[in-house]
Image 1 (tube, rainbow, N blue to C red):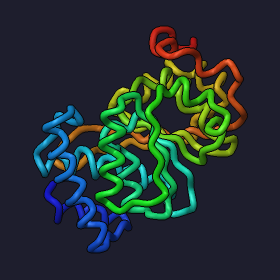
Image 2 (image 1 turned 120 degrees about the vertical axis):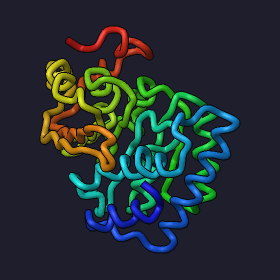
Image 3 (image 1 turned 180 degrees about the vertical axis):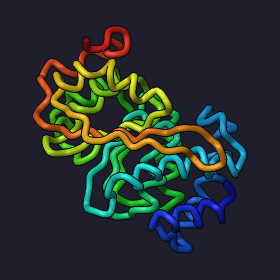
Image 4 (image 1 turned 90 degrees about the vertical axis):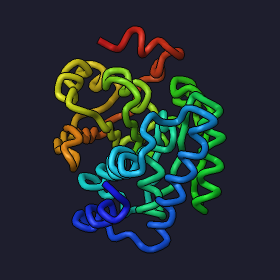
Length: 238
């Protein structure tokens, strides 16, 4: 998917990029590749693949959820900025907080935000388990998102504590979504969530199945969650 096809495909979904936004994606790609030579950000480096498997894939969440409102979004384990920064470029009014466990990635993201002239961005070097215990962040975000971070049973414990009651947790998953939801059923209930909808589709150019899982945050997460760093992954809630 080259840059022009990317723009055309988004337009079909009602997302019409301005010249400034097109330029921002071009800068994003070039900055990503430049920094990837110094630190490991992505194994995907061909321009057409970055536009499809990183940029377009990140924005697919907006095909099923309305990001045009004034929302405060938290991206857990964003890595090189996916999905939140492509969404921020498309929907500049979003306020975005990114938490990632690797300082090098946070350094990259700060530089990227500067290069893209993005405002309303905040970056935190922290483990999600610790971040979710801090009062200023707990139960404070309208939308919490994660893409390709961990299985849903683990993600639920990392993301639901950050999500305000009445807000949403959006998990961007591959073909394993249905089985992961089944495995995470107890965790979702305990943590105060409920499945709203699972949106299944194929990425263009035969690039595989994707699932956008939208969860409603129905009630506050019990204080004991998230547990200590590493525990959710080793012993998911049963």
